[in-house]
Image (cartoon, rainbow, N blue to C red; front, top):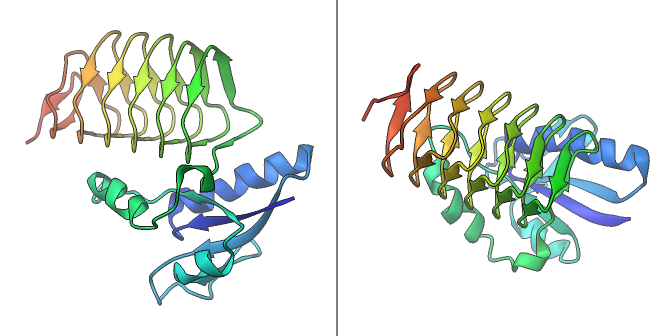
Length: 213
């Protein structure tokens, strides 16, 4: 079994525990050592039997361990690249985790340091970049492209031919019509219906989605 560390002690990392456990229930694969987080307040905490081991110095102590780095919330999603890159880890040090109950279809591509939760469906010819998180029951249809550092919530429907550029946050329950492009660093609010292209750096919400800023 390969040693694995989750960074940071975020909601996404805690969700990833269920993916690790599901994978190991089929075939023992990952020896999850625990979490790493720079915040002193959470160091030493326990979650489902896994501890927050300490700060990022633990990554050097456990240099042979693979890492899944999944920071990001609506308030800081545009900083995910800086947070992850600050770890100074090469691509081969990261791992991509796919829940056994996710479906990755024909000629789909997954980048490194990417997490797919239970019930995620990629139909055919879908490309998901590096450093992405896709939460449960999200469906991404044929030939759609998800850029690097994107976060997609649960129960999202992405129609065919959609392009979501890097560092976007797509809120839970949203729907995106076919062949729409969502510009980089965009926040799509919970439950939105996107029927038109969205400019980079925007915040949109509603049905149909409208610009908030």
